[in-house]
Amino acid sequence: MTGPLAPRPIEHVPSVGVVVLSQGTRPRELGAALASALAQTGVTVDAVVVGNGWTPANLPHGVRAVALPENVGIPAGRNAGVAAVAGEFLFFLDDDESVPSPRFLSDVIALMRRDPSIALVQPRIVDPRGGTLPRRWVPRIRKGSPERPSAVFSVVEGAVVIPRAVFERAGRWAGEFFYAHEGIELAWRVWDQGLRAWYAGDLVAHHPAVAVTRHAEFYRLNARNRVWLARRNLPLPLIPLYVGSWTAVQLLRSARNRTGLRDWWGGWFAGWLQSPGERRPLRWRTVLRMTLAGRPPVI
Image 1 (cartoon, helix red, strand yellow):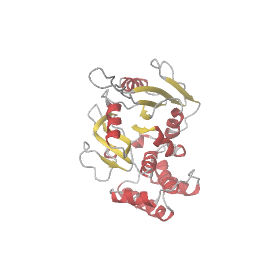
Image 2 (cartoon, rainbow, N blue to C red):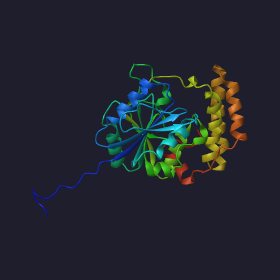
Image 3 (cartoon, one colour):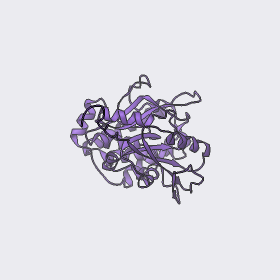
Image 4 (spheres, one colour):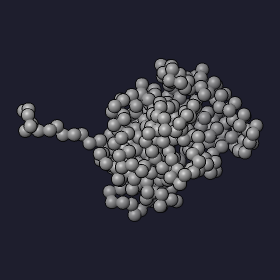
């Protein structure tokens, strides 16, 4: 049937599983994160709070809880929430981060549908209090304007969207890492599927500007996970190049500031002596694509 009386096709509404990770120490911020997720329009949302070492309670209607008896770390905690939510897309949100626009998720999904090569999206992070933004929040070497979108090879993990199928093929977050650099591995494994990770500088998430060194084990895990990242993901000839380049960077930094250097070296040696978990090296085709896109996986 055609003409004005013809039935309109039913528009598909995207479904998103929202996984909010929390240790229960920031109830006000957790409430803001959940409110921003539940306010999303143009999508259906199924949300869960993963209590990393605690039991979430008094959650908004429809939000479920996954209680972990101990703190299993950030990436493993996020993984624990995936099975508890339905949705063709996954939105990982930390409890101290929120998205101010109610169309954030529908805008991200529209971006992915306009360009099917994009399969992992991190928004621009802004401190709503006006704090100085850390350079690491723009995950590329040539930072430029924070508002400029681009393909990237890592993501800041506090607010990211990824199709569930891509996430599962990537092997999920690197649960062994506990903290630090799991966003690099996930981005690399997205690229290894012939897809791209994307920094959406035109979309915004809110997060207070804080120092990464607030985490007690920052220096040790930063070094250990750099080594593990290479051992898990790189072709054998590239492993010493990647680890060597980041070791040189650390030595240059330590010439100006030796804070945490002993812990860093302890993590570096642990990265070689301890098992990093499953090894899934990138294909050489992926290495070439990443190189042509501006970031060979040796820096």
